[in-house]
Image (tube, rainbow, N blue to C red; front, side):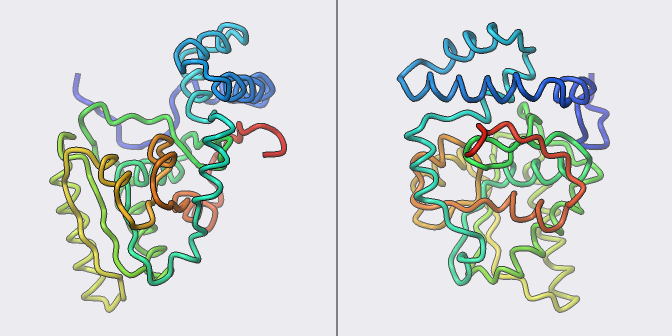
Length: 248
């Protein structure tokens, strides 16, 4: 069946499954999963143990997994994080779909999770095809505005070439940048690339990575929480559910 969605909004079950009544169990689950990961337990086995203990749904388990991380990963991510304001005059390597879909979700009232490492993540999935929604252009404009204000040296935006409609998204972004140039907006130089694996490039890049992808954060040279910067400043009504362990 064709995807008929017009928004990146919340899943029908999210209002209940991420309501205040479930937050204590979800936060406990994130803490427990992080404890197990810190002691070498495998992801799948640890998640099954914690999820079964708290009787979590599949979607809640996905949220817990995305918000948890080991102590070593947490400390490594904290050491290599660069505040957005310190990205001035530096090149930025952007995990395109990772950033865009999170901002789209925030704009549409969808669920935005704040994990143990402080990163914002969504539960939307591309599943091999990216579908433009009503929030796509507004999200891109917010991202472009924020990057212009940060005065970064260059933006290298990476899109997954195997994902359908990546070419159309690249064209849309190029058109928006051209329109902004005509209006006199001083955007930094942009380079939009379709590549087989953005994660692979971001892991190896010496530029600051704009991503919240955990496996990338664990190995990249430096990273910045651009999604959080944009949502905090420009989407004040975003539905943010904080599942990080208390005090972290």
